[in-house]
Length: 495
Ligand SMILES: Cc1cc2nc3c(=O)[nH]c(=O)nc-3n(C[C@H](O)[C@H](O)[C@H](O)COP(=O)(O)OP(=O)(O)OC[C@H]3O[C@@H](n4cnc5c(N)ncnc54)[C@H](O)[C@@H]3O)c2cc1C
Ligand code: FES
Ligand code: FES
Image (cartoon, rainbow, N blue to C red; front, side, top):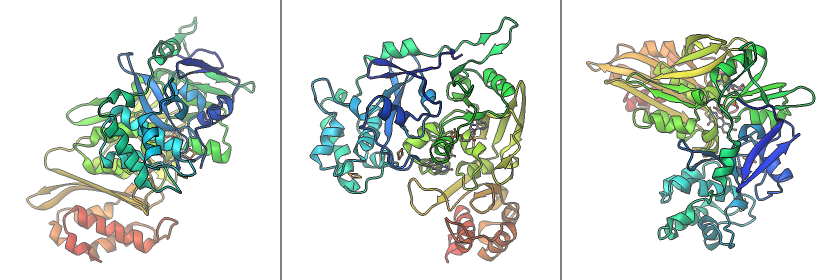
């Protein structure tokens, strides 16, 4: 339970820093630059695309003896959501004796910087990678830089610098580690109390982290019951998870919701339970973790997630946020629909289960009632004999949004397609299954499925609309060809 303090407390390089009287929607970036004068961290786009603002956010690990870091786009994170955490900026990397971090040194040596605007973000992304991967491959380095744009240097010297830093640190791997020995006690001191507070009548009290003079609130519950209570009291409240959508609204539309309920402090919502049949994924579990969770059993879904934004986006953004936001080109939903995922929705003490393919009712419309929220996603694990395929088509391979993403699940029963579930984004006002295409596949051998039959089903299923991301002709072709590829009938797919 949060205390009424109006104070956000973070640890910056061993010091507890208190932020008082700031707007609840102050971004971490503005706090660092304007209030901490840590101007190494830059603002490029203020929408999560360029990576100039990347910093590391640390939390005490499970046994409280170390710090786990994630890279974040500080331009998108609201300051109260990092209450109780540690922040590392590019200024944190230099040792007291003036020695640069191996990544910084290698950036100098490999000429990895020109104007330098992107450099602090790049250095933080690479230093973050090396906290868990001291010896990364070229591919891991490329992935770590998915969300860092450099306009002048070109990426070869930057990637070379990353590999050289890892190489030179072989002799002294500790040199790559961020020194957080002074942070541990401070983090323990400001750790948020997870025990709930009750009124004298035994009612759960949800206290704000920040209450403004106008009475606007930032609540950070620590249990599901508290979230439900907060929403019962403020059914119009805005839920905040990874902030990769909300941060944009705050920065670009100057959005100032009256009540914000942050889900990232709720341990139950950050939990994954695995049973033989399904993964039960809490609403605050970030996509990066989902990606690793499904990698062995649903590699195509993991690949869709690997191409979802960038590491700082995936380290914060949640599956539930993607679903609730309901963008017509949201990437996780076709995969969840094809696999037959079910959502657990909670309102007060009541829960109901809604199949993912029945969640949307229109463009950005869904079945959530006032005060109701997504508590968890149940994602069935693939069973023996089931095939799952998915692919995202976008103009750029990394850090781009879909023209269309398609996912399918089926069984081959004596060479015949059975139990077909097929879903798309980008072809309808909301991600949806495609029953007419499913019908065109069901009960047929893959070689019996013709491009003409699928074209007819596509034309019959979706409104023929050109969009900003692609023309209708292109999307229709993609919709058909992906299916043919997924069922292994490549010859028909040629166009
Ligand atoms: C640079 C960038 C790249 C991106 N790339 C992609 C991409 O490749 N593919 C893609 O699909 N999207 C992409 N997105 C969009 C965004 O990252 C996703 O939609 C993300 O999953 C949102 O999750 P979040 O936790 O950040 O949501 P938030 O921003 O915290 O919230 C989003 C919405 O969901 C609501 N919400 C959150 N949690 C719950 C809950 N438990 N119950 C009910 N409502 C809830 C919030 O109130 C809000 O309306 C990108 C965004 C950015 C900025
Ligand atoms: S300023 Fe561009 S990602 Fe944050
Ligand atoms: S060095 Fe200028 S943008 Fe990268």
